[in-house]
Amino acid sequence: MIFAPAPGASDPPPDLAKRVAERATETRLARDQYTYRQTVTVEELSGHGARVGEYREVREVIFSPAAGRSETLVGRPLEALKNLKLTEEDFRDIREVQPFLFDKDQLWSYQTRYKGEETVEGVPCWLLEVRPRQILAGQRLFDGLIWAAQSDFSMVRTEGKAVPEIRSMKNENLFPRFTTFWEPVDGKLRFPVRTFGDDTLDFRVGPQRVRLNIHYSEYKRFAAESTVKFEK
Image (cartoon, rainbow, N blue to C red; front, side, top):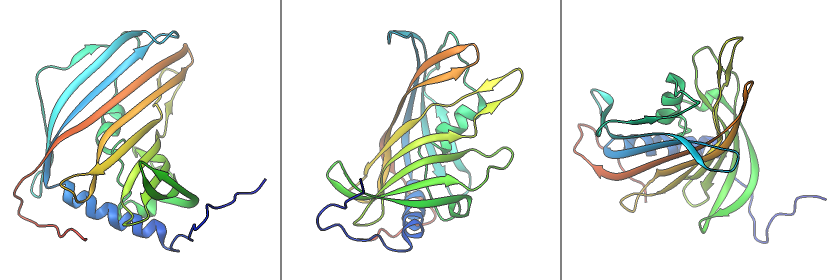
């Protein structure tokens, strides 16, 4: 069998990855002018799907040109995981990889391959595979797929996982696959609104099913020293 493109399908631009990265850079600069609330829930599930442990936290997130990202916990986290412990890498992934922005500064770190066309939530998209060229010590990178709107190259969905997994003789630090959904904010650029993952991590001591939910809500634009021009 061969792949048959849909009727009326068009070829992607030859610089597709570059144009997605440029749009993602514009998105990042715009998002840096918003505050938002980030709600993270990590659940341990039994083989039958029953919840046996949970971690939950809510943070108010703000960016500023001078200070960068700043976070404030809302209340106390619920720390009731039974078998797992969240690591520094898990929290880095929550900040940097789950809301992955394939921007110009990151373009050199990845190799890309065009995978076809799909419609997501009614939006015709280019499908782009993104994989790290190499992973340097201490790096956290994304390995997966990007659905970019054909109309303006904005991200509509990302699906993959954070890499690398970290294994040693004594420790294993494994990470679930996830999908992040992007929607327009203020009728302009698309920002991440939800990350969801339901995966089984294969530890040496036995498999552990994990469910991840991250909600990004209450986006509010604030005054900043710099301005961003939104393209129509």
